[in-house]
Length: 137
Image (cartoon, rainbow, N blue to C red; front, side, top):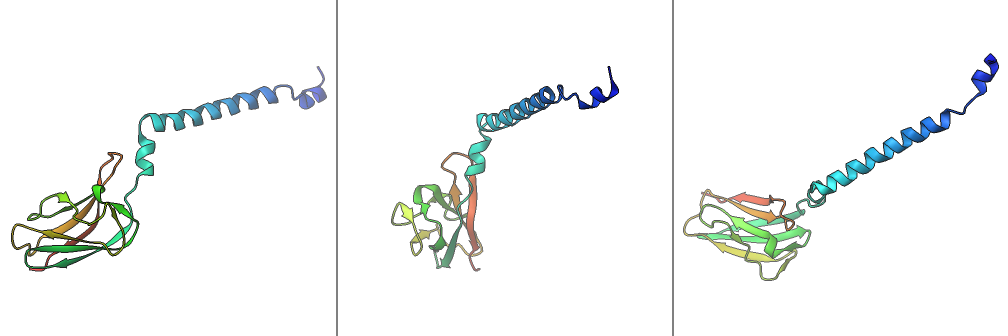
């Protein structure tokens, strides 16, 4: 065998590159399929909505107003504090948009309590607090 032929013979390059590409494609497919089979894909796509809420406190409760941001589903919202307890938000419509107000009355003076608006993930992934305020003493 001549030395010059050794450097010009490229017959083994194609099969090696083919094997490397097949392994890479298999690893990528396994990662994508594994993510969705284990349910991790649902959690990534369901993040808490962005909304701005204002709180107006009175003697026995609080009025919560949706100031802006994404439209929310009333069935996915809870309001909670020590006096109010976790309860569904009292917004008038099933879709909560900017300008909608929900009154919540506690079982007495709510001074010093933190009131939270909690979004419940409809896919069952968990909850997120999207707004909170502390009542004046």
